[in-house]
Image (tube, rainbow over all chains, first blue to last red):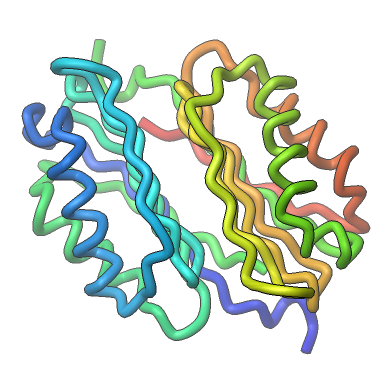
Length: 116
Length: 116
């Protein structure tokens, strides 16, 4: 098996036009990222979220056996940068669908990079 | 300021041909990622590393005020997937240089994505 066979897919999703209140709510974002991990069939190792203060953004990472999901939010821009990086049998596109449904962005820009 | 002005740059770096012992050493990888954050001028919020067991890989994230650095390693493939996502004045390319010097991969494939 060569290194190229490492089956990692990394989805970078820029969500614009998201509700600012949601983007400033660390608990809600943690809940949604955990839901996305579940939707993808990934196993959660831990979740670490940091809130930059009242009305400010959130930085959060859900660590997975299959890699990670992260979010960085800017409520003042109604913008969130999501990463969904998964290896093995987990299905990152299902996590993206779940997050899109939960955060209801006006627009989404997706970049997918095969890793390995 | 439009969402497009959010100044985030995300570097995905696939390191191949790294020493397997280093890729199985969670403490060493944590030290190197913290060093990379310092080199970039970023502020560390926390570091979370998980070791999958003797000889197995590591999943780690350094959370930053400016976003994050993550590593996922496969010692059996001498492969590591690094992400360096930074906003503001921090300089992710300096973190990449530091990690390249520390991990000494045979080859590096870099994808850079502007976020926001």
